[in-house]
Length: 175
Image (cartoon, rainbow, N blue to C red; front, side, top):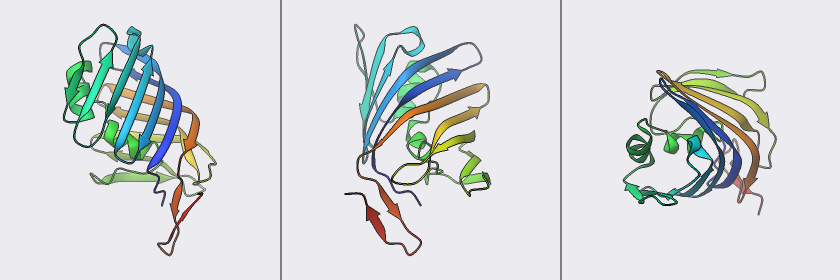
């Protein structure tokens, strides 16, 4: 099982809702529970800087007041009007379900990589895995819930301290 806690991805995120759609370039750095997410050109609104941890999240945007909330989902509900599952995405981006809720209807590729599942009302599709020092990671993720669809295309994975748990439960590190 992949047990990455420190990583950095760059790519593109897009969404389509009932009444609107948009996309942004994504630069996401995760350090244990702390994250920093930079969205460039999101939804026609310039650059957005989102950072936080398990206690709070803050959104900063030029010439706008800062928004702070208890969770990324609460923040996205307030700012976007729909819930972006950032906490779950920290797992989905690694090709694994979030441990916060049960994952159902799991599907796997011939190589035994997770290709789809349902979690917290979201239908997930994971495609196009890329080999990394910590094992294969998905380069395309699509999440759909109701009329909302979020697509993440990862152009670059950087693994700060890749840790892989082997079958015996021992961990290894690249460092």
